[in-house]
Length: 198
Length: 260
Ligand code: SF4
Ligand code: FES
Image (tube, rainbow over all chains, first blue to last red; front, side, top):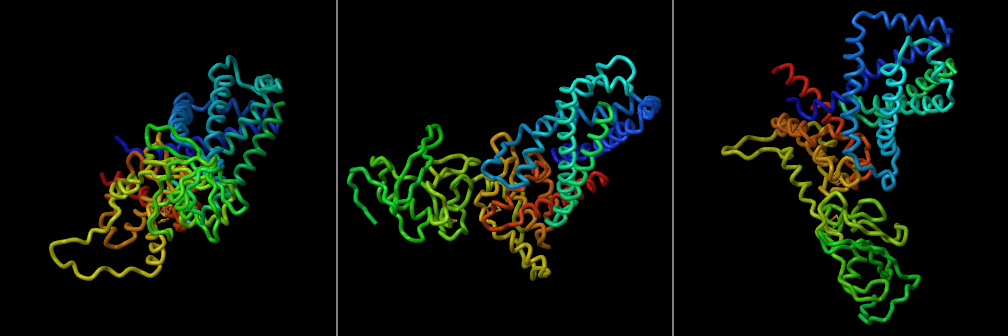
């Protein structure tokens, strides 16, 4: 039976590979909508034509997400936050990492249910814009995107520390800047793509 | 200094310092806050104020009360015994100067260790953790083992910082992942593993220590809030140590899996 160390490292690793990679792929496909309805529909059709799609989705998306989510809830539970006494920046990010974890989890569960599992019919530009025609839904998407991207960016920073890759203060600071840029980049891309549907 | 034990109400003068202290008779007893007015003297520290209360245990309402229990030892921030929460943050009472604190000064016992009484807690777990990770260097033997190995000055310089740890528990107190729900060993023991693993003789037991840190409550339960390094009164680079030991455990974990 693997030790705690293994499960923790797996949790951290899965956040980047495949979940982080999938996040990029997802934003890429969404951004096809900037090139028009047809481009987006072609992208979706291509993905749906992937052989063994169910297996790919199961192994590269659903199982990693489920493990990351459930083990993550346990990690959130184990924490007793103290940002009011120890008001350091990192402590706030640590706290936000847990808040964004829960927000992202709720968002992804809802998103997957509405547009994937509970969705009847073909996914298309029209179907997505139909879903997003409700301004409340759009607002929730904006919140969900912010939460997911910040959780991913800060998680990437933590990944480098907890695997023992960034050790020194300067290395950790540099990766923090890189992760901040990553967050801004994803947010811009994500919001622009969202805007293409509303 | 007045040693007047009269029970007449003590009126706070501008030269009095107000302390609000969280008190409890021990586990199982409820806790309550009690206020004290303590005559000020120059360069007074929190331990000095507690000694005044001991001499004259009268609270802010002028009532006779029991003296506040606390611990101290070295009085120069090297033993860690007087660690308590002062105005919201864990630190040493002996090096906490009243002049530098905002008043009223609030004192409370550490929350991450079992309470003994008033401001005294049982920090035994700090020492148990050092035992768990074998934070020592084995040099005892039945024969003369010869002179010790040479240690490069850069290593000496770095490990000297780590050796300043006084097991006070300030780092554990500041850590959101050290609490009654989690079994996390906390930052101090990890830095001590870094210290003894950096020593050529200590490194002979490196893998045992890494194994100990890879189980439940081990190093992987660090969530990088990084409060510890900011809170440590000795300026120990705890987050650097944690990252260094993270690298050791990651490499060790992968290598031992591949060799199995
Ligand atoms: S590392 Fe610092 S804060 Fe932690 S026990 Fe040692 S001296 Fe105290
Ligand atoms: S009495 Fe030793 S640290 Fe304060």
